[in-house]
Amino acid sequence: GAVVSQHPSRVICKSGTSVKIECRSLDFQATTMFWYRQFPKQSLMLMATSNEGSKATYEQGVEKDKFLINHASLTLSTLTVTSAHPEDSSFYICSASRGGTSYNEQFFGPGTRLTVL
Amino acid sequence: SQQGEEDPQALSIQEGENATMNCSYKTSINNLQWYRQNSGRGLVHLILIRSNEREKHSGRLRVTLDTSKKSSSLLITASRAADTASYFCATGGNNRLAFGKGNQVVVIP
Picture 1 (tube, rainbow over the protein chains, first blue to last red):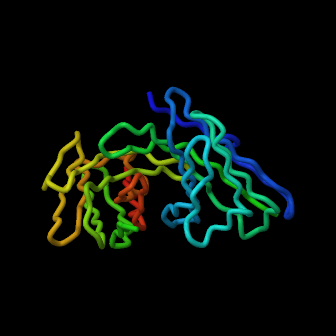
Picture 2: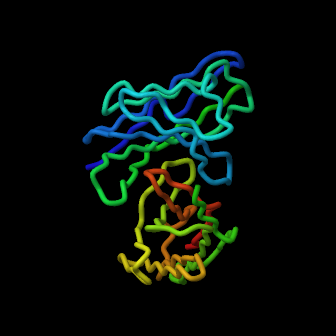
């Protein structure tokens, strides 16, 4: 149980285009979903936290108009990188929390490798 | 926000040896977690240790926590080639995790 999927696993796009990444909790309802960004050989940096049906909370320095997050249901959150540029190339990882536990364990998706040409 | 920070390490060990990595953090915590990440993949939760615990075991994993020094260690005993990965500690509050820099471990068969 507690499986999180991401789609696509890898995407290459041209500069200026928008890319949508999906994060799904397959066998549980996720009250909260998180989006992280990871550069090569570096740690995960939290970008934003989203709760179903409400606006995402973005971390300091993350442009909300650049990284659009929609958490339309308890099993799906999407991250759209708008007008992508080469510096947006990175590994994007989502996680989902089902709440109700003492420490709100997060279950991670396999990640999406974005390359912007 | 809380931040776990490992001493940056790249360990290269022979199969069968033990691997030890460390993590330090800055603020008080309720718990500390360790994750493994295989290259180009997501994170796998390994173990959680609560602030009132000093040591915890899970299979070949042993985690220690020293809240007075704000540090934790992860020991992998009898390493296997499949243990080759990056290992991160994470602390969190209010449902948000802050990850350390990670330790890359290479186990040579």
